[in-house]
Length: 402
Ligand SMILES: Nc1ncnc2c1ncn2[C@@H]1O[C@H](COP(=O)(O)OP(=O)(O)O)[C@@H](O)[C@H]1O
Ligand SMILES: [Mg+2]
Image 1: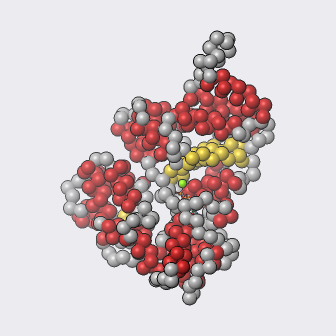
Image 2 (image 1 turned 45 degrees about the vertical axis):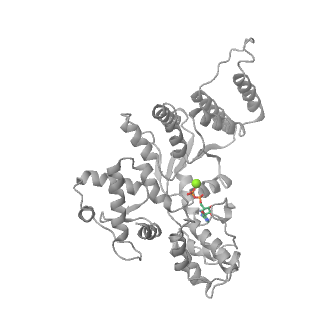
Image 3 (image 1 turned 90 degrees about the horizontal axis):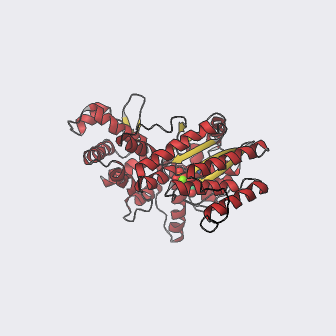
């Protein structure tokens, strides 16, 4: 990764959780370049912790596509049925077609949606299924590509939320399976089409639920799996530096302050923006706390300003089995409390964990839970096979709340 010069970035204002101007999305150029390269060959599944910057990465890719690409970004978070999904895709695709195609499609959709009104007219139309609707949209897009409009890549953000919504609905399991199989089949029908699926958590839980219902699902095995890490320390420093300057914050030593801020939040860009925003208020009120103590305050604040309770609460959602829940908590408590507050977190082997939590659970079951905790971004495995918390920040939060 090309390292930035500490003051190479422009002045920036803090915007935690907001949409950034693509030039303010920093430290991701190499990742983006690699993603475009991968998309030449296959579709991608981008699974990484929430707030790490996935949406900003794919929105930057949408704003500044590599040559020859035509990106379409869609947030699927609130979609509740496959039919809604198909409508969303279909409607969006219309924006990318020439006026003639668009007009023909509009008339057809209008008549389909109003079949009752026109039932006396001999139209030869039937309402299309959601699968037919998506197929039609994709077919139109490919035809448009042949007219030189660029190769399409869909960025389907927060796919697991949509799947969870569908799963909760009527015939949820069947519908989810049908939709996932359909998404899988798109690459066979339209070999040129590319999709980037993103999500923070959940897709493996959904597949596990399908398997539990005896559906032998492996719908995303053709997708290239990848993840996104926090910023490199150098980019984290540079971001904090640009924000300190942009917000005109006063520190005795700006380089040291930028480094301390980025380090104390594991170089998560979201928390860097957040510390700066809150610090600004603090300075306005005349305060000048010490940086690490200030971050620690955010971790213990009763109103949970960074919504870190989510890390504990989601265990109840994603580990529905009570015994599993208990084990997951015990494992995380053990790994959080072992050692002192400082990084790097202590890693422990499977045997050590088994001894510490004094469980008679067999090793295979324990390994399965550890694997889940790893997939859910709580834990990371060191090259020796030992486990530790993936993010020191989350470990510090857990220490304070276990
Ligand atoms: N590369 C980046 N450079 C600067 N700030 C970033 C970057 N990525 C994320 N952020 C900050 O973090 C916030 C959350 O990022 P977002 O992309 O929404 O995370 P995710 O989609 O992974 O949950 C953004 O609103 C922004 O404030
Ligand atoms: Mg997002």
